Length: 220
Image (cartoon, rainbow, N blue to C red):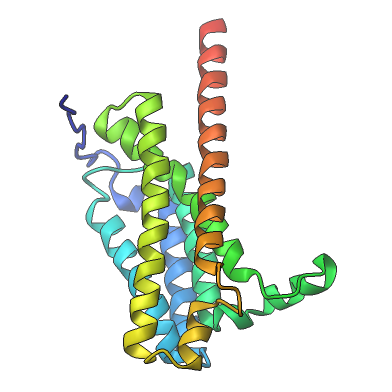
């Protein structure tokens, strides 16, 4: 079985004609710079955002080769802002996570869990769009591939986190704080489950929205 990639240049819409994309880029870079300059833990910020910068470079490199839709860029932007805000502090000490303890009666800071859930919820549709438009896969194959990729990336991230904590922090208390386990030995597994749950929800919405759009188109 072979798949034909349909990546193509979209020079008809140069970057300067997409004010939404310019706004997202400017807001994100300013926020990234602000958090980097004012963070109380620069080492943690640098480690947390090494992948962030890689994603930004990747999106910029492929911008005129395969351009995602505005909803996909919006979801990516929201997730990146969520993550960078988390990297501003140790995830386990994030102020929003501390605030959630009160109204929801949480015993721990759940901001890291929120970000993992957001990873699946917000980045699934862009990945699904690449599978559908970029590789011309069916809805079924696109869904299975996207869900598998989210689960795999979640597992890979947990492994990378463990390696970084062991190498950079030498497995001490600071390394445990970087991992954000907060005493939960099943933290990595729960993070992966939340990301997968978010991905399933996103895939469901994508399929329902597409079918409703097709139904409206057939009626008109």
